Image 1: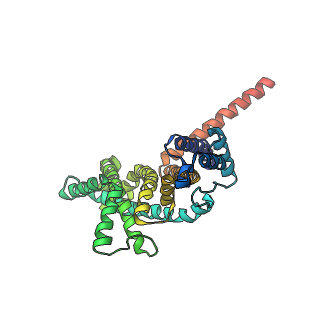
Image 2: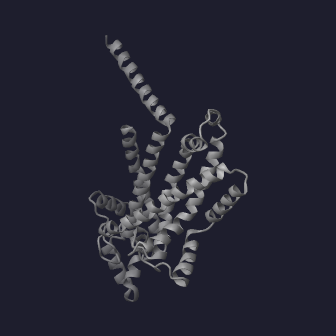
Image 3: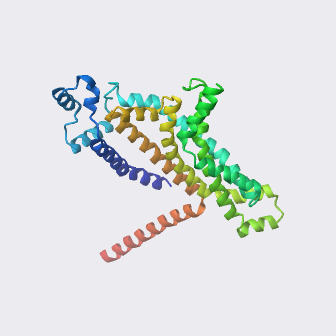
Length: 330
């Protein structure tokens, strides 16, 4: 397993290199000049050219790319064009807000979505199942930003039950987490229901019931355990979607996280902020996918056995080659 993890970590290197290059290329071809935006009313062709030279924007793309990688290798993501502060220091202060929002939102989605999916599967083709799936389909189809704005208008402005922006108190976290997680609750519920309906028709579930096991043991100890394997992959992929949802959610609710920082960088054409934020978000997403693969191998014995047998086969072939070489030398 350790060899598998190390191999996947090494595979992250070309992925991060590709992502960072694509981001730099997109920034270059996107309309808008950071130097012109920074100078505003004082922008003249001479001043724009001088500022672009100072910021290194006149260098060729390969040179700027190598400079960015060299800085990253030394823990430096550059200095923000707008705030004149080190990008790394700003990101360190903001990452905890984003991680807290995403992790709590994901946990809330799992804790709510799985029981709803199990309940719908156990009442298949009844009004309870139809109602649960109708509600799930409704919230899956609802954009996160629209639902967040609706909650702000209704619960913050009209009823004043929650603070309009900020997370200085625990009440400030409720609406951002709920608005971001609601659609993912529906997705997990639908996936769990589909997997449960497939699993409960298997022969080993029929055998467990024939042995007289209580229904709750059959459902949660046997059926749900096997139905969770595809759900784990869905939950892992949701992490990236939640990060995307956090970008908008943080802006709407005034959360000083990495998403708000990235949006501000995009608006102000702040290249170091954009490059650094996307790079860190890519690392987080890649590590979560790696964690999902490891959990997948732990939960599903078939995957673990395939990996072990594959390594044994490689070692056996290597041993045969080594023995053949020794015979040739003799």
